[in-house]
Length: 246
Ligand SMILES: [Zn+2]
Image (cartoon, rainbow, N blue to C red; front, top):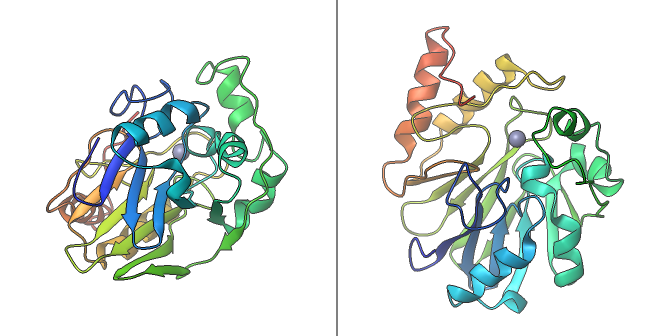
């Protein structure tokens, strides 16, 4: 689904645009002068995601990079499928989740517990996938006038990244599960969820300039998207807790 001249949403499940597998996070494609960049890959329906890309006029062979917001299986589960389909693509993840993704660790990303509780299919298991770039705060890639910058935003879980894009226009924020439309957040009863860290991460995002807010689930906002981050940051600044999506 084309969102602008360069931005597409090519995946998303029941809590998104119903474009691919039911549990998939939103999957975005950004066309740059040095190939197509994906943000997140969903759980396990990468074939559908590539088919959606083709329907939007994007050639999968032109995909050069993938940026993963965090290691939860609904965002990163399909990495091994991607690796098989497109071996040349460079995969970037936060440095502190690179090893757990590399060994297919189902405990570190809370998959084992979530699967027991029925959030994932009983027969889904995580395939290991060795990544290319172990990203720290401020890591950047530039293609022409497009620059993507990783922002470390722990809170929803450990090793969470948001990706800020400056593009000569209004800018974009791929916010993963850190913040959603309506200023909502996603706290879960998992060991690495941290409310204080989430609040500090929101303060950092509030300092950025961008037009489009592109979260990992639910709706997106192509203009004035910053207001959703500002709303959440303001609630935190009054010692409150923004509305949780679950
Ligand atoms: Zn998540």
